[in-house]
Amino acid sequence: MFLTPKPKVVIVILKEVLKAAREERGLRYEELAEAVCLKKWHIKELEEADTFLTFYTMAIKIQAAKRVAIYLGLSEHQFLSTNEEMG
Image 1: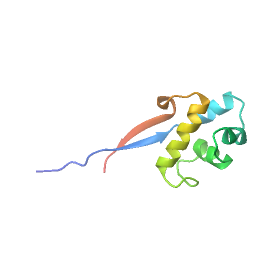
Image 2: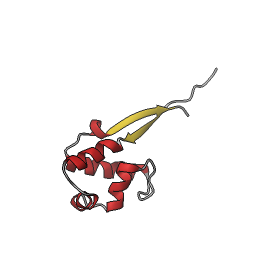
Image 3: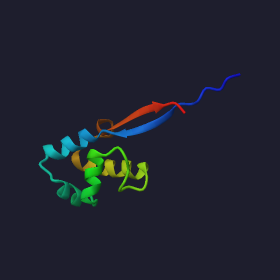
């Protein structure tokens, strides 16, 4: 009997969507960061990086992205995507 690995669901932040929404509202990194109680480099990482250098975990980064998205008027399906990976 063979066991097949169960796919792992990976949540992906659609960085370009967050950036476009911020720019459409004419907000600078600093302005958005202040409005959502984050630092400028947090906003920059949400929009540009696939890692979580300034966040402790990906879960924390996703929570920060949700806070930013709510402020920008985005729903979760607009800025979050899921991918399945084997293993």
